[in-house]
Image 1 (cartoon, one colour):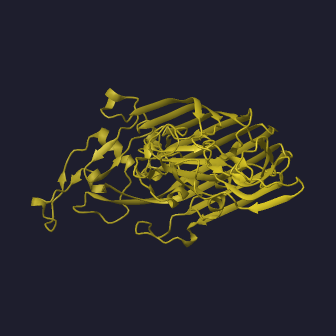
Image 2 (spheres, rainbow, N blue to C red):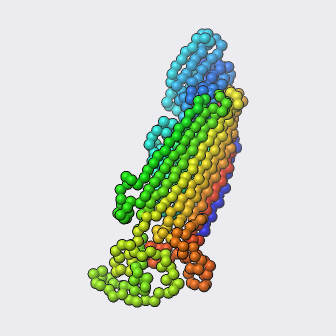
Image 3 (tube, rainbow, N blue to C red):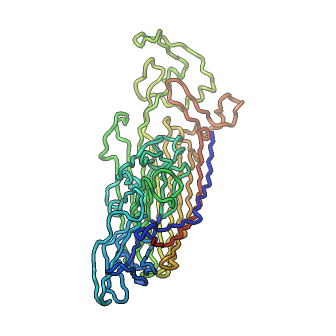
Amino acid sequence: MNSRLKGFGWSLFALVLIYGATAHLPAGAQVAGGTISGTVVDSSGRVIPGAQISIMNVDTGVSRSAATNEEGLYTAPNLLPGSYELKFSAPGFKTEVRSGIVLTVGAAAVLDLTMQVGTAIETLQVTGEVPDVQLASSDISAVVNATTVRELPLNGRSWTDLAELQPGVNAIQTQPTFAAGTDRGNRGFGQQLTISGARPQQNNYRLDGVSLNDYANGAPGSVLGGNLGVDAIQEFSVLTSNYSAEYGKTSGGVVNAITRSGTNQFHGSVYEFLRNSALDARNYFDGDKIPPFKRNQFGGAVGGPIIKNHTFFFADYEGIRQSKGISSFTTVPSAAARAGQLCSIPNGDPNNPCTPTQVTVDPSAAAYFTFYHLPNGPLIGNGDIGPFTFAGQQVVNENFLTTRVDHKFSDHDSLFGTYMFDKTPYSAPDGLNNVLFTTLTSRQLVSVEETHMFSPRFANSIRIGGNHEGVNNNESLKAINPDAARTDLGAGGTAFAGRAAAQVFMEGVTPFTGGVGGSPTYFYHWNSIQAYDAFLKVRRNR
């Protein structure tokens, strides 16, 4: 059986107009960043047009300038999540500094200011001024911040697992695990989540503003079921309901992540995690020895300036090398049964010894006994079948890479680009140790966004991206048993000459899944080209 699924998804938000409903709602949130906005007035409540605002990211040291319009409003869209310091100045007023302003992904922080009459050399400094209450949007969401992402222990280091920390988010299993073999992949490989009771395929996963849902519109992930790159994630938010239409595409929840940016200082890290079978317990089917298990998960991250105060880079690599022994328990025909000596229990009484009956074994059927090992344990029931156990090796090698470059053209123009690559080959023997099942998952994502401030009243962000998902399941089967590669075992003899060994199903015996070319092969390939444009107009209601 061959199955092919090719999808080509187009997502296009041609124009999004966001108008503030009140003076406290000057601009909407941004998918790939955050927004700081507000109103500047004097002590009598009159607006101050032309006030200059310097917005500095404390982590990167990069500043962006803004100014209030004739209505005293200012806005700074698409800012990186992090801690900010804002400096306000205007002729005839004291310089005011607000520090400790923490901006999260997708958030719209409102910072209104009342300036005091005085000279510019006089400075008033206040720390932590932004209220926790979200004034600029009505979405119900929670943020997993940078400290949680990088410091909370994660088995497998898949950052999407942290979404389960939020209320209303639960992991569910919609299909067998990746170790199960050929039936894996029809609903995607990622860890499926239900958010506020919605189906997993109703959720939307975004990285730097680009949707990275897979071909089944499910959770993204490699054949191992996770999303590496914990060190590349700055933070992410989980929006459960009532979020803005700019997120689009799905009716369930939204997992909205943003990657880390470089700073004016070089910084980096390296790590390795090792697990092996030395401390593992033996399970019932393992035999005398514990199957060998070795897992190395390693990587490194580095970031810094390319041009100080203007251009920054960040890169993260993570690799997995895993070899895991899997104990397989199967039932196979006994030596007597292969010779045609079958035993049937009279009246179904297991305590009544039976007399073997000699039957003729068809030569074409006898050729298939090569795919069934002799029992290596006590025979079962009437002695026609017995157990065969062995420890096969499940091998996975994953390579994951994320890079990001940020560039500031001017105080009014900035750009960033992100590239993600993930390739994971997997192999494991079938239950009878005849063929080596293989699965290859490959993922790539690109996101480029440019933000331009035309004036204190107008801003525009344009984002173009692409998401590629590919799965080849059992495309390159390999024969462990040389007979599995034979092409003269087609059922029916000469009528099916040249075909691979067929699948075999017998009552009480583990099914033979077919030789090389006889097992199901699946191909899933998905390309999604996405374009978004967000035009922001700042307006104050009278």
